[in-house]
Length: 322
Length: 279
Ligand SMILES: Nc1ncnc2c1ncn2[C@@H]1O[C@H](COP(=O)(O)OP(=O)(O)O)[C@@H](O)[C@H]1O
Ligand SMILES: [Mg+2]
Image 1 (cartoon, rainbow over the protein chains, first blue to last red):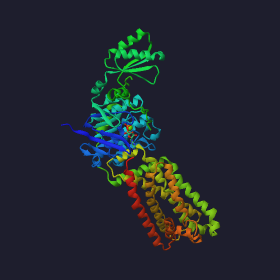
Image 2: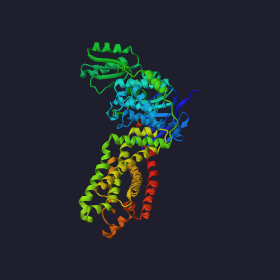
Image 3: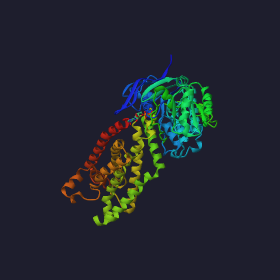
Image 4: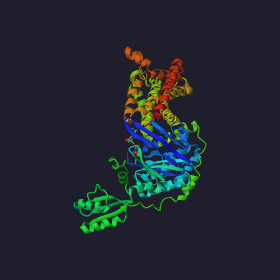
């Protein structure tokens, strides 16, 4: 029988008139990485905050390792750790002091807390910055410290809210390594992300949410299959000929073609990867010069389009990682 | 578009795995241990932001020197006599005025992600508020020590000696600590630190100036005299003077203790409620 780290039933949350979470059912098997994928405002943070006992559900139920988040908050808190979307460490304190504080709050004596702090700072490559105030850290260093603060005591379930939004590729890779190490040790990870690629690399299963509702669940492979093999992106040399290129592309791929903000760029779902070559030949035949052509995984927007028939909401401008 | 390469410079996975393996959870900490940890946090923040110490060192000094020399001679004939009655008053005033920064600090910090982390820990939650209030006692004590120390240099000699001095200062600290709970409530209610500061001024100024800190209430017009008489700060000043000079002030001390109990009884639960409120 599967043990579930998280089970929710028709979970809802409204803030005044805003419906933030609109009936979410999640089943997260223990020991897995579960991704929650969705654009800004989809309700990812609110869902996570309900599961982490910070916000009371308006209705519905949520259990963490069998404990109700509303009625048994303490039992839930003893099994989780939360690394929020915005830095959950104190900027005035040094890295070492932040981790020592966490150790003491979790029950270590001062000495043991200091020792544990040093150990984690070394593991996360922060030993040189140990005695520097966190407000002088780079975004990547702060994120690493943030994750370290969440594992001072190894929790059974870790919540990571958009752990890599705004990070450079190197820091992103380090966060991913940490997630894999956590699951190797048996910890369950629930992570939210706006990037399909991240969900694809880390998550065993994922839920796509939009406007507070789960619109698809499954393994990343299942999800991508439902969207198509990937996306073809084309940039034409002469922006004036983009309309012409669009018609050609629509013809060859038999798919709707999207415009990017870039006036010379086009993209379309690619069901059969072989059709990319055909598209290139058709452009050459028509005398349209192509400055870039790439085949990639579908973007989140393309997943959305495929799943919902509408684009991800326009307010997807990235929030600053404070 | 293209896949981001996984860097090879990432921390090697094995130390991370062994660090996770050694992260056993210790026994759940008691309320006192957690409160002390939060107090330690607050003291560290004072250390990192020393400007917080300005209003408990320089400000009381300026007040004491200014009121002693600027108004002292004019009001009582000699600075020594004036200091006898005004020093306890200035002590009360400076300490009372520094209490509101508790609310401002809480208002600034509460929206921080770090408080979300605290609120999701399996700990005795009031500690997150009581810890910093204990650290505030250190700030208030510093302020009191500055006033008393400088006053002694200027010629302040309490009749009741060091014990009376301690008793008086202790009462002032207790009052300040109890009043801090009022500010934590407002700090959690206010939308911005500036509005908290404004409320703080609005309450603190009349509370400290419409009192017997500087003047004898008998010299005031009747309506103002009555305001002064009901002001708890007036009772605190009278009680502090009495304790320091060995005069009988049991009634005033009683009123002050009741006021303190009242403030804590009302505002500590309000603060906790507001703290638990979702945001
Ligand atoms: N405390 C709050 N008060 C009012 N509205 C909120 C609050 N928190 C979130 N919302 C709203 O709920 C919706 C979902 O937000 P959120 O859970 O933060 O989404 P996400 O994390 O996916 O970006 C948004 O429309 C947001 O404006
Ligand atoms: Mg969010």
